Image (tube, rainbow, N blue to C red; front, side, top):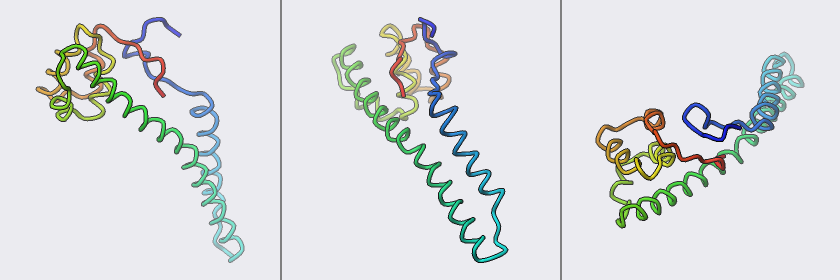
Length: 146
């Protein structure tokens, strides 16, 4: 892994999830859809059973990831409140209410020297999260993101 994190290399893949569990689950769902047979009552019941099983497996494989991301986003929000207060001595709530969660998450990668200006620019110009990340010059790495 590179020592310097930036827009080009900050995305993270988890091999077990992204390259094993998800592809196998999608393969099973695709295989099941390809084998759907409603010609008899027995085959219709089996097809329905396997389709439901495949969908359950698909959703179960995503559920822990969704929980982790939602929790992480709450932590980032608290982190940003603390960071803003540390830099300005004032509450972040007024500015925070003008930002989307995605914008807030993108802003957390900005270093101390540019975050306040980026927050104001984002609010004023309604900057997209991807553009916020691209405009960061002093990238604050986050190697613990889920």
